[in-house]
Amino acid sequence: MNPIDAQLLQLAIATPLVAALAIALGLPKRFSTKLAAVAFTVPALIALWLWKEFPAEGAAKYFFASTVDTGLSGFGIALKLGLNGVALPMFLLAAIVGLAAGLYALRSGAERLKIYLMLLLIMQGGLLGVFASVDIFFFYFFHELALIPTFIMVGIWGGRDRNYAAMKMTIYLTVGAMLSLLGLIAIYVKSGATSFDLETLRLTLAADPLRVSLQKNIFGLLMFGFGILVSLWPFHTWAPLGYGAAPSSAAMLHAGVLKKFGLYGLIQIALPLLPAGAAWWAWKLALLAGIGNVLVVGFITMAQRDLKQMIGYSSVMHMGYCFLGIACLGITGPGGVVLLMVAHGLSVALLFLLATSVHHRTHTFDMSEMGGLAQKTPVLAAFFVTGTLASIGLPGFANFWGELTVFVALWKFSPAITAVAVAGVVISAIYGLRAAARVFFGPPSEQLQKVTAAHPPADMGWGERLPALLLLAALLLFGLFPRLLSHTVDQALSQPAAMPTATAHLHR
Picture 1 (spheres, rainbow, N blue to C red):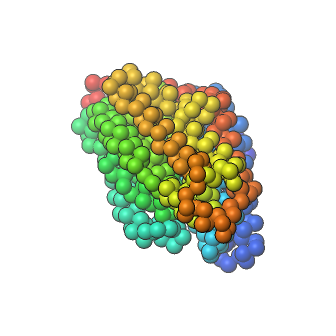
Picture 2 (picture 1 turned 60 degrees about the vertical axis):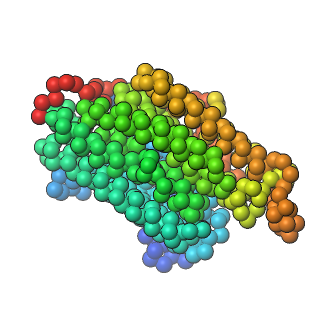
Picture 3 (picture 1 turned 180 degrees about the horizontal axis):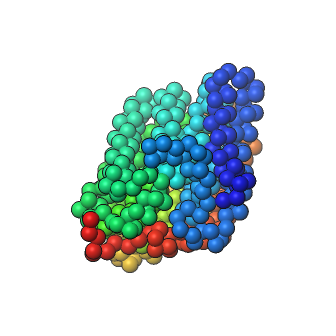
């Protein structure tokens, strides 16, 4: 990484954190909102620049193609930042969704807006740090930094059942984080490496792998620890409840980006370092994800009447596809998961934004109390239908390529599990299109007629359109030109040292 890009990478992470500190120190409100707008925009511009400048040949180099050591180190821990072919798309996702969530928050009119923006900025800085960390200690540290504001925002600005939702999220996510931490520490201790540096760990374990039994145990810790954080069935119940109660910008960032931490950790850390453990757990993970996340949660999603809860459950369901791709091992499955993570992050953030826009006009999330909104809010209806089609995986949107790649890998893994996954697409189409019909088409309900008689709904203003357009444009860009993301992912995962395969002679 050249010196300018290295400084830009540090600046992208530092900007929202420094802005949050300035707001916490008592910056006046009129300056706080302007500073927050800049702090959300700067990382997005830097991420686009780094994405543009990322060398095609660098993506095929060993591990992280570009790194910068900040000089902060000790006890085998170093704040070393870098991007490789897998981290780059996730870093870009965090920047785009963070900008959209920030723009929406600035026009949200939330009470105690300064504190709201401060917490959102901390969350954004932590998310960028997660995907730029080469050291797995700071990979974990930045996740916790981003996670803490989520609990606070749900508890203070959340909706119905916010206290119960915040408590349940805290319990589940703390357990998941502790299991993950145990697994990461076990890798460091048992590897014999002198550093938490991911490159050093990979080199050490490529030369002298852990014995198979140890890999099984450690991979199990990471699979269930990261799995809880990603809402792997049956440890998923915190997610729909938490997203249903969370304020919109927090839901956009958590469901769109922070939830991908566990999947990213499995691909970037667990699969290459513990190949034999991954192979042993693959079928078990596929059954949990296929039957649990895709089918069971899919049918639960179909039964939802609350719009925000439906989106929350659909997010849990789509995480099943990601786990299925990881279970396929190799290159195609995990590569498809990276594409799907980016696509899902953009589409679910868009749907949570639009669900709140619907609520502002109907004063309810109950879809049975809606109907006919398309006549009065055609732009909102167009955005919602488009976002729903993207989530289903319609060709032309980024979700299509992620799901298709996972299905291709899954067919080689198990045709039966592939049939289950394809059935999930049908389920998605049913609940997604039915929700669009209930909310925007048909005759309006009596309850909605009373609400609109007193307060006729206005269509989306630019405070809502701009973040929605940002997310939708990214979905279309990566849907029409998927190679913009896939070429770095393919080259990074295709390196034997970066993604070793399980062998029968692991000896330690």
